[in-house]
Length: 321
Ligand code: AVI
Image (cartoon, rainbow, N blue to C red; front, side, top):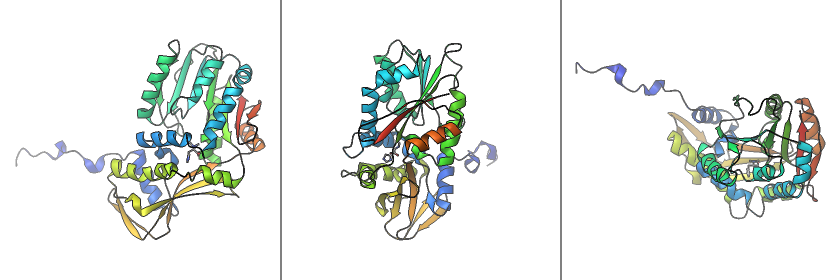
């Protein structure tokens, strides 16, 4: 065919792989296998996470909300005037409402989240309820470098908000790197940071092994996502949810355990699984108040007050910078 032109064909093999594709390939090729937890949060995964937050066993969300509700005035007093709030991993934008109500009229709110789909709906609801507030959603992976718009007011203080103990999903090195870059971004203001505390492992076990199996569905959703977005052929029924407390490392670990010997095809590669072999999908580190403060100081923050609940399940720290 004389009109055939190879340059007009889509160069499939030259197309750059998405971050998810690259991280899945390297995670399946490594031993032990792993998938970074940030990939939990596609549309379906974010909705499952919202259901986890409402579970009777999952104490962190309601405990942190209670602390923020009960101590809002005191917290706002320590934070002082803030021109804008930057929230990392904003999700459904529920907790920030407590801050917006308590702080002295912030002008702008910058919610950052990896899931654009989830953020859009939440932003529309927030705008309707706070008509005077400028809301600028940023769809970004805040575990990597990203840029913030110029400050809304010259010399206006920027306050960071990082609730939910998402810091605990980073490795200790990643947590330090994140806090260092947050300290630079927030200089002149500070960070309001919520982290889960070390506690009775039985309580932790229940929180990550709920009776309704929502956490299991959240974990297995990673495989559905890989099938839908990368054309993989995971059979989710071949994997079981496992979550346990690793006491020496002070973290809950989540894994997907292969129930039988089988193989999976992913982006032209074939990966064999032995029975009992696991894919490590998440670490959720638990902190002591002193441990968190040491980390914050290493990253360049000062130490402000900390608020906890009566049972000392969860902690909210004000870290000025
Ligand atoms: C978002 N992150 C703090 C949750 C946690 O507890 O580590 C994610 C989660 N994984 C299982 N349940 C909830």
